[in-house]
View 1 (spheres, rainbow, N blue to C red):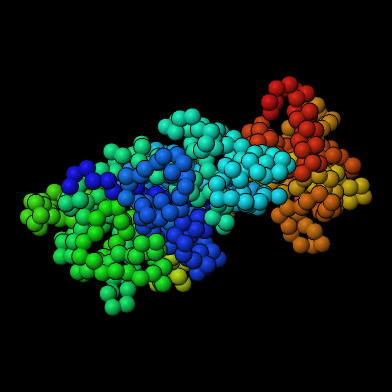
View 2 (cartoon, helix red, strand yellow):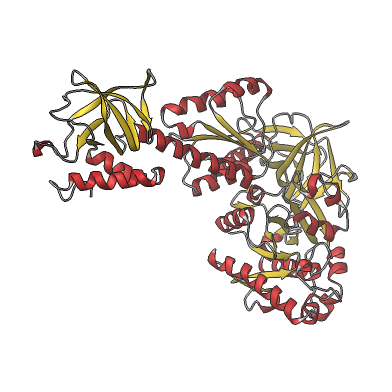
Length: 606
């Protein structure tokens, strides 16, 4: 029936360990979080929270405010600690109707928090902020189930600490372009972000959070929630799994219409769409987590939006998480070929909508789902990182060989970023011997953090390599009583005072008998020997024999002469740009060289 309200789809986002799963766990009254590795959600899942649960949790609060909900409940998508799943896409927007961003009041905004809000902002997904762990504020006591009453009962110093930390979060949101305030102080929910203080661990503030989320979706998203229960289902694949006794299955969020056993379904794919029939449908019991191994699934004949459902069907080997799914049915009957082709075109168009636009040159990125890939791309583009290739799946040998060819363009492009994926077995040995740097992580901010560190170090290394091609600042003294040959070439003992002397480096004098030669190259280093061994460079503090071309001792050069590297203006300016790589005495030598050169040209090097 058209006009039926479906459950709003809610996604929970936030930084690792800020309490996302603990919050959902508190609502479900289950112990999923205790069975997770490190209490961090490892895979995306979904949980149905029926209206009765919302009413039970909110209790007297609804009566006091005279609120009546018409939505049938909430469908929570629990994300694995990264922002990519805020980006589960459906045609024209995000899968989630509303998001809850969880922030630890004691830590404030962290990298994943910022990532999540950036993506929500880009796709205009409404959200509220659950300011968690208020129970850890010094002196905090929970005396009632009413959040606002409890805040007023705290000691003055505790309230002051709470208000300070709380409004630091408000301030950060303001910096990001959002007006926000505590939910009871919000004057216009359409213009301000509602912030709800909570303690997921102590089940405190959950009534207020559920009330605000349910109220906002019912008031502002009512039209979005209307659907025709008889229409063919539309959904998004969350996970592809191998299930004992069932074979390959897909966990799907149905966000519109309904799906039945024996329905023909069409699933998006990178190549040709998958067309298959529903063999069986399974729904998790209410308040159960879809991916939890201890969850019990119920075999059902039909499922309607919004819900999470496990689908068993043949031909699912090429199914990929993040892809759209459509039921092929019209007027209560299976569609004909014409309708099937129409749906295939719609699915192709939907995939094209989120296909990644790549650059001519750049790094290679891989991810497990289309949504993950798009999120990673978006965050890299924000950092002005060029992307040559962006695809779904394992990191293959072909990816590695492609990344190797990037070295011709830039060594900084010989990189592969893998998000929540793996290196294929046949590529592992090749990868271990390849110069390509591979980063692989299941948490997006860690992946980007590791890549940023590597990129920064590589840029420094490249800058230092570039500096070796430039005439570096150097100051050296011809040692008395160390003249080994007067000319052709002159061989003298030299004491390197500052910088680095290199083979082929041109040298000049500050003062010369012929003033025309001052500030000009009079010789260059042909070769150097230290303890009878030939060397290519000598650093400050070194004394060694140096062969100098085109000069004669006693004419152009003398014992105790100070020689400087003869730098040109371009090299001087480049060194000024990279002076962070130079030592203090080298910078002083550069100043001395500039003074010599500016005797004849006051604007030299400026």
